[in-house]
Length: 174
Image (cartoon, rainbow, N blue to C red; front, side, top):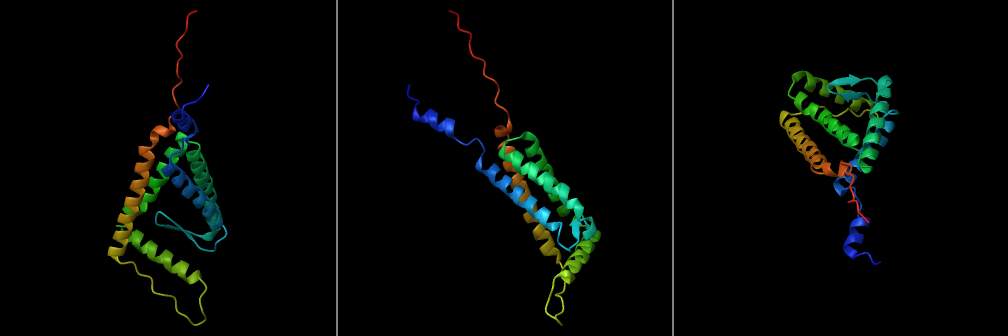
């Protein structure tokens, strides 16, 4: 029996949409960098709080969650899609916090600490650290657009994460 080419194309087609593969790739790539951050001497910055390098063990859960989300997206698992959406919501929080003077001050302090830790030529002074309001506003808007687009892609392709309903075959009477 010959299978029509249109049916064969449907059977061999990859069920994972390309945008989902790209998002999963970024999550898996990010998980590797979370692990690399364990060994860097820089403090971490999370929601306006400066976390000392001694607390870098916090990168392990983020690496594990990003790995789970990336791998789960490639396997079209609904919990991975929801976890990725939660990551996106967490990523939007700094944009909301950026309007607070406390957050801006913490960001300035964090950046100054990181710049001091970067090796430089002897006698070279570190560059001044300033964030202008328009630059911060522009960065927040661009971040919101990017996060919104990825969120929309995950929502748009939500049908791919639904398990196909079992098909009932008609009972044939002899």
